[in-house]
Amino acid sequence: MNTVVPDNARHGSSHVYRAMRDLVRAMDGTVPGKFEITENGVAHDVTAPIGPHELTAVHLRRRLEKLMPDEIVAHTGEPDVEDESRGIMRRPDVMVIALEDMDVPGSFDPRTVIAAIEIVSRSNPENDWIGKMRDYPLLGIPVYAVFDPRTGTGAVLTGIHPTPDGPRYATRKDFVYGEEVTIGDWTILTEGLPRYQDGGAQGPAS
Image (cartoon, rainbow, N blue to C red):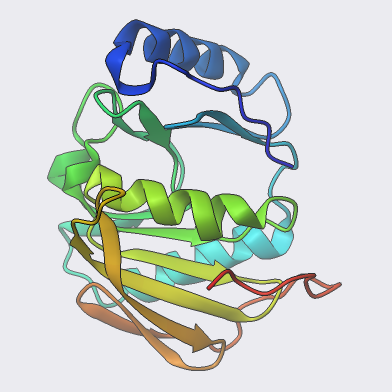
């Protein structure tokens, strides 16, 4: 489920954004689920990640880091990536980022993130397939990879370009589990990635 609290001021009121950010950080760890801030307000995934979601993140991190130089990691966990000027704060399931760019006192600068990876939530797939597909090019993240354990499919989006609705990804390469997938400079296998036991309802948004 996705609960959105509208922010009518949007870009123009950084104090409104900071108030939302303080609220989200106060609830983090005390209220179940995951809170993020979009251009439209606060997004709340009320269901905590379950085994296949977390295990997928572990598999992807390990497979990527086997190929990466020591100075680059596939990081899972905190902190968020944030652009206060746009009123967006997101927390990718996996972030490909250089170690030196993690040495910051607060949130990561999204422009230092090499790639963002999301494992689709069973309870709120639209957040990954629609919301983050919109927000990550706005944040300047050059590669966005989506893995969907509901359907055993995914997509990698690249090539940020301007559109009338703002920056968007120009290229989308869909894949099915079992195929190779390229994320940034690294190509990994998707064999053996876990699926949700009851499959999924609807497939990915096109």
